[in-house]
Length: 117
Image 1 (cartoon, one colour):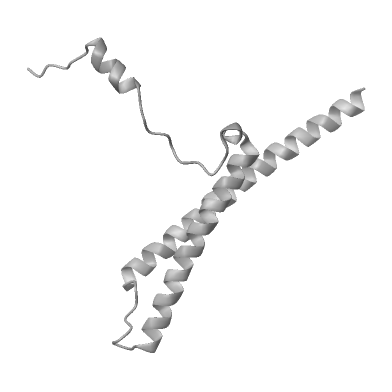
Image 2 (image 1 turned 30 degrees about the horizontal axis):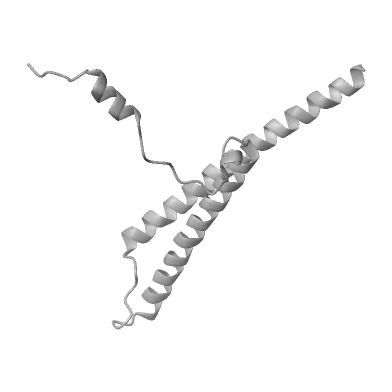
């Protein structure tokens, strides 16, 4: 039978982590929804730009058909990066839609409170 070490010393060691996750935001902004959305937008848009640049360069290299300068990506990898860029754009679009819904709801609520006063 396998024994699992549940001693307090083991659990205290696991609880203390030296790792801090990367963030583009200052510590004071890490829990600000607008700042988080802007950081996500920056990160995803840079990733989409990189994917599209690699895809474009690979398409150009295939069109030129020069053995000295083969495409950076094969056709399958190009397709994979295309789908990843599409998925990233979809995530960004969904998040933006959610933020707009929240802003519209809070604006409507503020307008209703003004009318009731």
